[in-house]
Length: 296
Image (cartoon, rainbow, N blue to C red; front, side, top):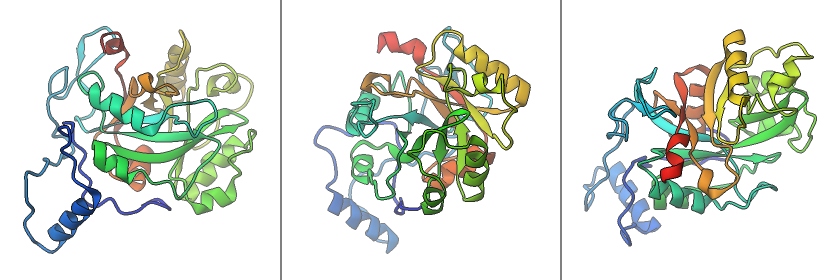
């Protein structure tokens, strides 16, 4: 479990929004969890746990996600957990999106964007004490924290931030050495992944044209909700050339864009430790829901 996180025992990631006024007060929920630990039966209906590879039907049918052309495409991995790995809340200096507003949009648009959770990647900062469990309980989405830092090879998302990583790097530095970030973050228990690599100036592709490639890069952001025409194609060439894995994120700074691009994992993700483990060595792929946005 990542530093600063509390155990998430009892957290159910499910697809059906709670009925109006049907939420359980936090104290009652905690009593229910303690009751389960002692073997006492719980009152009332319990939401069904989702297991990796077993999910409710999605809009494109079981085990499929629609491409931007509207056709069903068989996924490369069994249906698992879908997370938006890249978005910014009002804590970032260029966003005005409250976290709760993101969750309300995802709850309302489940048919178009069937996500299980989000990972907040605030610019140049990380707070080990940040805790969104109350919102998780209220809306039924997993909420994890990461950071977007700036390096001499462009922007990089850092997952699994802990005290050792914060002691090693000053996240406010806009010229962090990318090779050190990739290598040291992995050594200290996290994973650092370049984001929007096809974007001019702040993306990896531009830097690879005049600098040697980085060692130890696991994956790059193949689908970014804010990409302009041609940027994703540049990333596809980068992935083919260097054999990187691919992930996706909305890069949302506006509430309405949350979840338009995301990442589907084969395994269940219930903590930052789970996320780091799967990004470093698990099975996942980017998914694109932008073709549905106009009808949302």
